[in-house]
Structure formats: structure tokens, C-alpha cells
Length: 150
Image 1: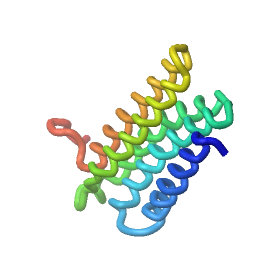
Image 2 (image 1 turned 60 degrees about the vertical axis):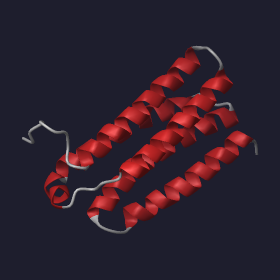
Image 3 (image 1 turned 90 degrees about the vertical axis):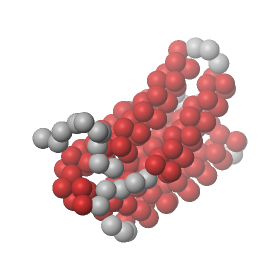
Image 4 (image 1 turned 60 degrees about the horizontal axis):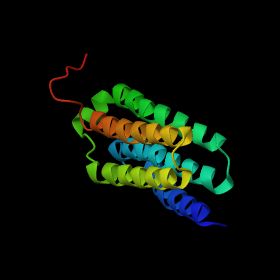
């Protein structure tokens, strides 16, 4: 076991265990936030495992997860808009903490990778991961000002 594997294990076990607990229990507002955060925690784990095992295909899985995870949350936000409007979730603390974890992971992997196309791919994944989850969290908490719900 190297440092990359240890970091992935700690991140996945701690983060996804907490997210699984949040999805399985509690009110709707906590379940949708936990679902959003679970994708934001799994993506850095896949990137760390890619570096640990030397498997570039795991980076592709991280790219797909960074792209489709927030989209799934936006679908839930749209389908559950009426229920979430009564008691909207507010999870900016966990959202920014997970965004920080994603940023730290991407920066560490960029340093380890060095300048190459792989580094550009990691930067794109990081931008999708952080931006997508911030937008999805905002959509869960009631949407954006000035945007009508149709």
C-alpha cells in the first residue's frame, strides 16, 4: 500500500460511509445533499486510485462521474422541486469542504503527473467536479435568483 492508496481509502471509506448513512436515513433534504456529495467524494477517490495502481482508465471513470454526478443531482432537484421548496437543504459547508478535497486531490495529482495531456485532463475533471457540484448544491437549495421555475 502506498500513499495514494491510503489517501483514496481514507477518502472513500470516511466520505462515502457518511454519505451512505445520509442517503439511507433522515429527511429528504439530507438525502439529496448526501447523494450529491457522494459523487463529489467518489471522483477524487477514483483519481487517487488511478495514480496508486497506474491505471489511466480510472481517470476516464472519474471524468464520467464528474460530468454525470451533478447532472443526476439536477434531475433530482427538478423532480423533487415541490417537496424541497417546503424545506430547502442548506449544505454550503459540506459542499465547499468536498470542493476543497477535490481541488487538493487534483493539484496533488497534477504535481505528480507533470506537464502533459494527462494534466490537462485532470484540470478539466477538477473544473467539472467543483463547478458541477457547486451548481447542483445551489439548485438544491432553491435555485438561482431571477430564474423562474417553469
